[in-house]
Length: 148
Length: 169
Image (tube, rainbow over all chains, first blue to last red; front, top):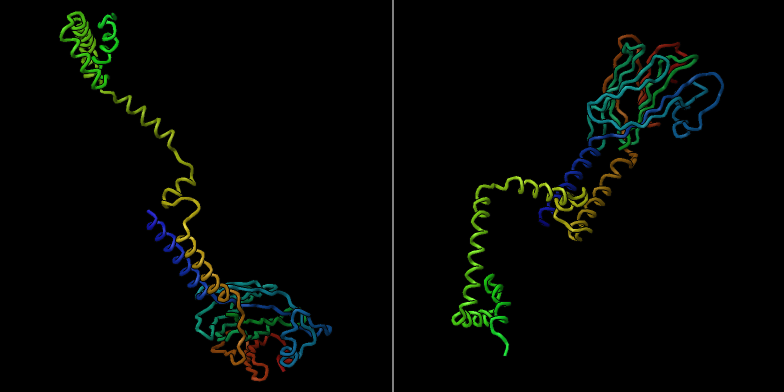
């Protein structure tokens, strides 16, 4: 009776462990920041301090404001859709994850119609900036970073 | 002198019911050999038992007692219904608290899972040598520019929806 109980508990714990580890291995934490860039004013959102230098050296805009900061747990081949701003939405799919890289497909839609489709590979901690969709007097810049 | 029948008659009923000790039984048997009164008394007891037993035995033979068993089973079930905790304990075959040999490996395994899984979920491991690589990009509606900055270690995809002044430097 006691042996049976030991076996059941140990088996249950190991099944949980396998599930937990396999789930953890399959998921990729992805940070998505939606930034409004414009030439109206000259303020930089303090929340963008870590990418301030990159933005300053890459773009001509004078003002950057963080609209949204999302942390996503992406599972391979399951698209995640985010409403970026004013009719612009983003569909992000983790295509595959290797030890040092994660591959994403990112689609940007305006009013439901695709305006951009791209595949990018990111190492942990690295960022891809996707910009251009019009927003008021400026543009939207999407900063996608992989964390695993 | 005391009448032996009066002392034996107290034993006689117990002898008839086979409740006497061995010594008492021998005493009664010796007395019965020589006492016709007690023999008659014993005989009348046997006749009375036969008279009573016959109709009772006949009635018992006719009765199945199924309802009695049903009632007994119902009583047993009503009394023996265990609580959920006792049921679980009984199912696992353990007494509470759990034996050490069970919960120590279980706790150790749980800690191992947490130790392995926690960093996988929450650890951020930025790589200094890592890259951002644009494998493929297309737009059916707008012009697109891809710029990979080695200095900033970042890839930029720019979709031209506005004027050139809004494009990257």
